[in-house]
Length: 209
Image 1 (tube, helix red, strand yellow):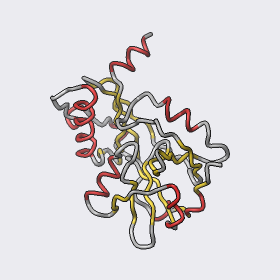
Image 2: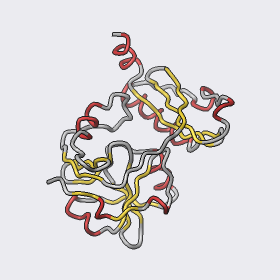
Image 3: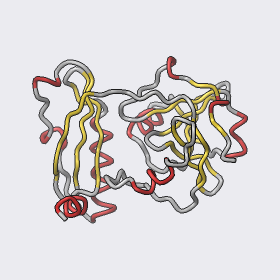
């Protein structure tokens, strides 16, 4: 019952990259937190992440994941050593009803789909015929000239928002049947930067059947 009450008190999370003691991309996390509290909970005030987050001495060197649980107020804040997981293959999984427009702490709907990944490392979710996100990241695809991002992601990630704002990535509607038009893809999120070393061939996205 205690864990259940916490889930309702703090239904949302922000995951922020801390690199050598510096909170990365903080304005975009602040903006999403404000919009989420307003849109989901009707809260009109703003809780300053900058004033709430103090980086302890052990996190002054290296890369850490800062997980902020919040709702009407801020709950538990965790700092965890970042250990990237190797994801090279994706399996297309269809769900036309999934809704993850806010970064919920409850990920049951996504975990249910993740169970269908088979031998692949992760899933790529298709909603109403359109490419959206993986289980934990946004995806960008290379068309030979530009990097593009699905214009209807399940979640508007902070890294995606930054790359769109500076013009490095362009939004585009990507239908499932249009994947063959792209040659490469990359996964991005708050912890995963744009990095040529993480580019993968489009063939690593496996069909649902």
